[in-house]
Length: 196
Image (cartoon, rainbow, N blue to C red; front, side, top):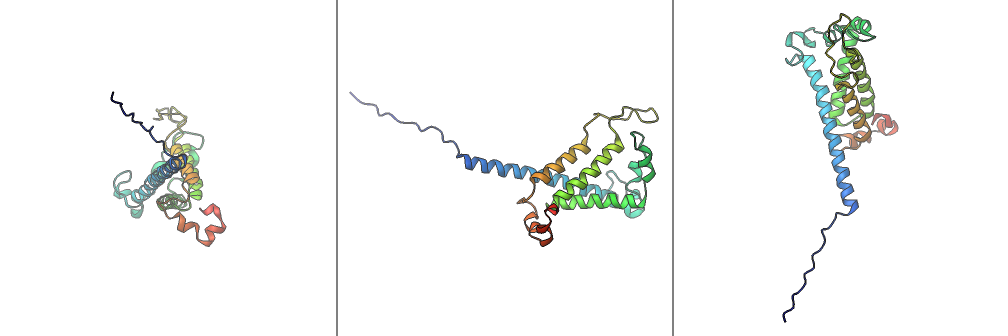
C-alpha cells in the first residue's frame, strides 16, 4: 500500500510586532508630513495670490504690490458676529495688512520647511480663529437680515485648518521631509524648544 506523504502547510507569518509598529509609525509620520505640506501650500498660495494678484481670489488690480489691501475686502464686509464693527474698523489699515501678510508668508514657509511648527501652530490658530469669528458661522442672518450663507454653525474650514496645525505641531517634529533636524541643531533652537 502506498503511503501518502503528508505535507505540512506553514501558517502564514504575521509580521513581527516591532516591524509592523515601525511601518505604522513611518506611515503616520508621512501622513503628518503630507498634512503639513498641504497646509503650507494653502498659506503660501494665499500670500502669493494677495501679493501679486494672480487672479484666483485676488485680481491683479487689487494686488498688494499695486496698492490693494489684503484685509479690506474680507474685513470691510463683515456683517455678522459680536465683533463686526471692530473688524470693519481695521479693514485696510496698513498695520493689519502687514500683520496678515507676514502671518501668511511665515506660516507657509515654516510649514513647507518643517521648522518652527510650535510657533506656527499657535500663530496660525490665533489667525484662523479670528477669521472664524469674522465669518461668525453661528449666525443664520447678517445684521441687515440677509442669509449669512453659513453651512455649519460650529465647524468650518478655518477651525479644521487650525486643528491640522495643532496635529502638525504635535506630531510633525523631526520629519524626514523637512528641515527640522537641521533647524533643531541650531543653538538658539536647542536652548529654546518652543522654536521647534
